[in-house]
Length: 290
Image 1 (tube, one colour):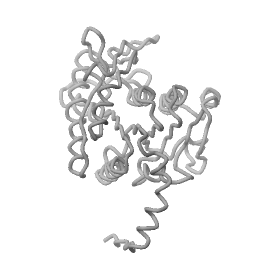
Image 2 (cartoon, rainbow, N blue to C red):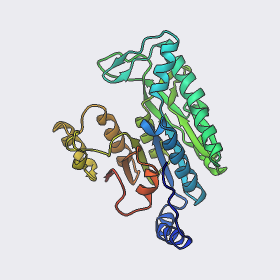
Image 3 (cartoon, rainbow, N blue to C red):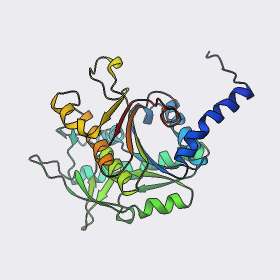
Image 4 (tube, helix red, strand yellow):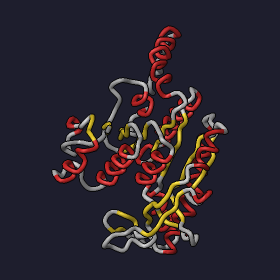
């Protein structure tokens, strides 16, 4: 049985006092959190993430929660007897798969997260890119056929801003739509970066299943704590940024180049990693700045 840690009232007061400068720094600012990985699956981590988000909201920080849902989509496709196909790491999305993506992301996954926020004592409103034509998209332009995987053409932040103004946490599923009403599957990291830029966010935080960007993927002690946007290309060429890390770091780069002050990738497997990142000088994970 885990031993309960008892914190004195004096220690609680010291912790709150130490947090004050960081609260003042972020008060009234918008912070985008891209939610995924193990933190979205493990019940204890989910609870910790929601607690962090609600606390930040209560001290006057505007939090926008953006999520994907790859495992849930794969599970539903399997139940429906539809084969999951991937091209260059992206889910091939035919018309039938696009319908499942919309059903799972904008339906079950999104509303489950809204419900969890509410159960933890917060107030949330679920949105997806279709609402208010918030995320406009077109077919991804590449030498490969991805089906209805979309590139974002425009973000209308007004639906998100309205929700924030009313004191709710926007929980956003990353599906997009074109002028003809066709739904597109949008990479959640890409959508988070574009939305952060459109909102003039102070910060974008990406929860991952690794400590951050590592020089050696097999050695967690080789964490790169900070990089400059101009280093991304050379780090890709050298192979330090590779595989699934490429779209994540490129999304961070896009956000920072578009006006977001900093982008951070943190280890979502660590309980309360969001608070550790925001309420300490050292932070956690890999920070990208301009």
